[in-house]
Image (cartoon, rainbow, N blue to C red; front, side):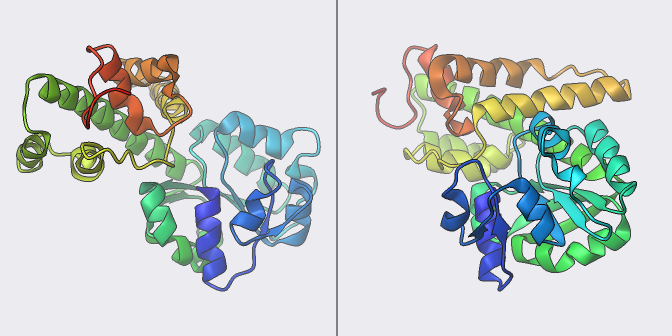
Length: 286
């Protein structure tokens, strides 16, 4: 996702200095490669982070050679990752002591929206810093919703991602059942999308999946599981009962256990199919 956003920013005429453990990643996205994360901080006024989770974010910020030791007053760091809101607020407070704004900007829309610069952003943080980010956000997002103070963006992202996990896992199960029942899956989707079962997966994912296109390149099952765990942590902090997390945890955990953990989470339908008699929505199991 970081590469896709970078390509949109570069295409919009803004130069980008990029760093990734994959040394070729910056060049593939059209950015100028930096030698280290420290070099990014020393060479830019606005820094965007796109990382797997809060553990990695904290390591990049506070670990050996972490960027917090090299920032300067007036800089803005926008964290585009899916992360713990509590961690985000803690890091924002640390950066604020150094005169640096740390803005959380969760993204939604998937790989297709990222390629087109049509993401939805859920943003939390200082209003002045958010305003300064508007020219960058305009190149990667169609909709920017400011949710409130620090952590509000990441909180909204976790709530959204949980619903995404539930709908994807549940729809995968329904589609496998439909296949085993001998239903025409295109007609089943037509029914669902005109009825109360409609959701993002029925509208945007499964019309492709039933024809063999898994929309590769998006969020993996391992990362989906991580997002559900972060959601559960959030609800524990808020004192809200989480009664519906077991389903997606089981589904994406199964996908990982069966070897689909590092591919797009849409492959959860194949994991459910595997334990349901080798079902594939399109064709037969290879």
